[in-house]
Amino acid sequence: RVRLQAQGAESASAEGRARAELDARLAQLAHQRDRVAVARRRAGYWEQELRRHTLRAPFDGMVVSVDAEVGEAVAPVPDPARFARVGVLTLVDMDSLEVEVDVAESQIAAVVIGAPVEIAVDALAGLVFPGRVAAITPVADRRRATFRVRVAFDSADGRVRPEMGARVTVFGFDPPEPEPEPEPGSKSRGTR
View 1 (spheres, rainbow, N blue to C red):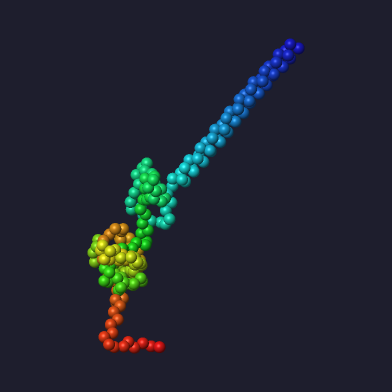
View 2: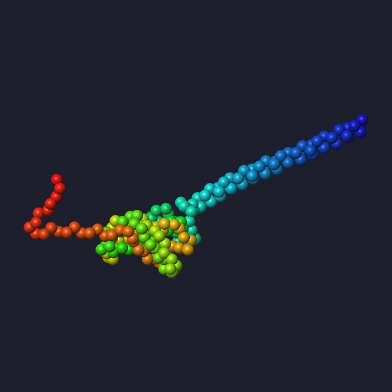
């Protein structure tokens, strides 16, 4: 009988140790689950920060200049009160490069949108690219007596890069002939 009581005490003691170990393991599991939840929240925060600081381009292109320094304040629109830079970088769509040329006021009447042009890029001597007049600035530059005209290449050429010098020749459109002024004393004939 003494022996049976000793075995029962050992069983109760082993059961107590097993329960204590189980409770300790469950506490460790709960602690690890809490750590995982904290890590997920932290990861979510950093994913949000990464999205907030990621620049997304509105089109495919090549970065040709980085205009902001690390630590410099930037803003989507000019804000003099914040002393923030507006542009972070310059992105160029290499498939739609254009040439900007100044056309003298005396010659602007001969230039119309859609007119065919030849573009001779200075760095690519001997090559001439076809193009067309894409836009004409509606306001003259008073200091230089010129109008800014944008000329588009008909097809992209990988050798042409931004800021290369070029000469443009406009073809196919003659300047309008001025109407002759009526001689003094003559009557103009019109149609009714």
